[in-house]
Image (cartoon, rainbow, N blue to C red; front, side, top):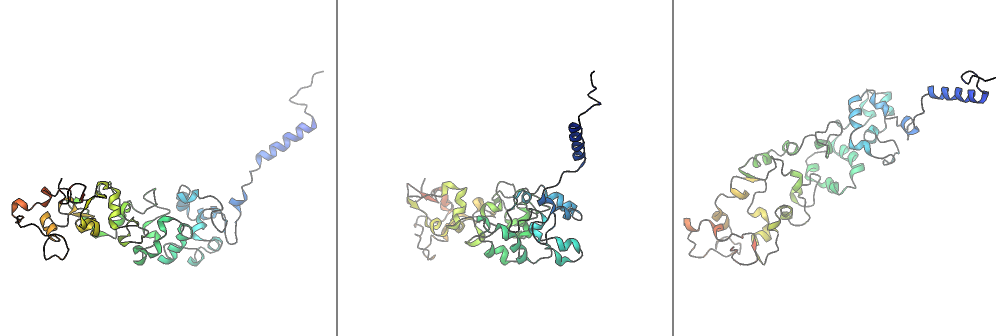
Length: 308
């Protein structure tokens, strides 16, 4: 006699299928790190989503969300509490602002300390504590936004240079001059020359040597060394003659007439030590354009008079 396999099953097989069906209907257990606090006072990150749904959703695609587990001293799973502190008391009493670290309400020093607890080892931020921005009361959140950034890189509140112009309005006017570095056009950024997090030299320039070293990152042909050096460039740097942001004169020169700029040093009464102009340079129209002859004014390998 043949048995019907759809009806007659052995007891072990039937028991196995019964257990399999029960397991399929039971939700899989979540990892312990996602459901239980990793340290005293912490709650699961999902608890923040209840009230802060928008911020929670934005954080999931933010660079901070990609930080690996264990990168924080508390051992808590990376998330809201990594920056805002333990959230247990906040969930119990949301109306009390003292139960959580609020970046908007905190003083700049407290905000900076919170961010630098992770970012202090970066070469970019090593001079931040003594930077001009900190001395003028700025904090990390003055420029950066974790939840509502306008740029993917650096999580800035506004793209450059609009962000910098919110404080440095005088520089905005200079970049509107007829001759200017192409910052407004997007070819150059403020942070290409300046380190907003601080630098050991004036104006937070990105160079460890003379201030004009940052200019040579683009203007390589002016770097030298030259056999015959123009001392104005060697001693005073590019800003002896140029306004680095913008000017009404061509080539970002500080004055409109080149001969007037040269005569600031090349006269007997300038006390600069530079040789005065020869007597046949009578400053008539014929000799007013110094660069007509002295074309290699930044330095030359062929002529001490910087001829071509």
